[in-house]
Amino acid sequence: MLRERNYGVFENKPLRIIKQQRRRRKIPRYKFRPEGGESYDDVKKRLAPFLNKTIGEYKNKTIILVTHGDVIRLVSHLLIKKPMINLAKMRFRRASINIFEFKNGKFTFRRYTKHL
Image 1 (cartoon, one colour):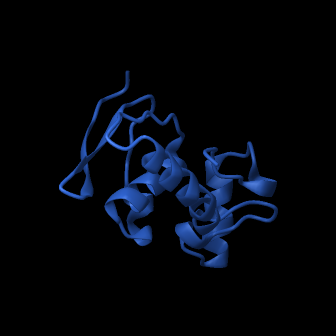
Image 2 (spheres, helix red, strand yellow):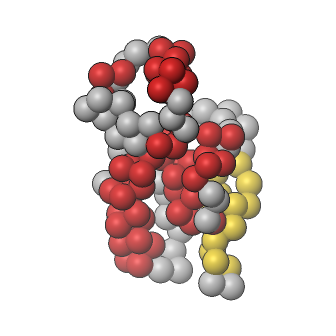
Image 3 (spheres, one colour):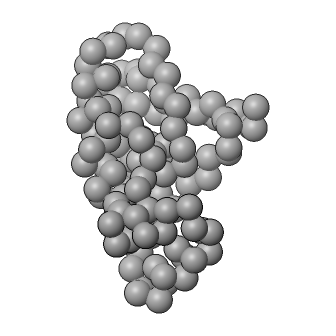
């Protein structure tokens, strides 16, 4: 399913609070699962089947996904095999268009636009 990460008890809390808790527990960002929420792995497990089904259903077609930051990072991980540990370093601009192109049997990240 395509929806943003569930932050559980930290839902709608400032990002700095989430970061403080994660750092206090010494857990990497991509492994951190807030109480009642999801880790990047959890989101990846529900995102991968959706992505694979969509790509299979619309082979050789243009697909448009509207997402938030964590989901677009995981889409990048799944499509271009970006290591999970590098996800936090990926910067996607808000309200931007990110283009993943499929050529010669693999996806590449072609470009993104600045804020629309």
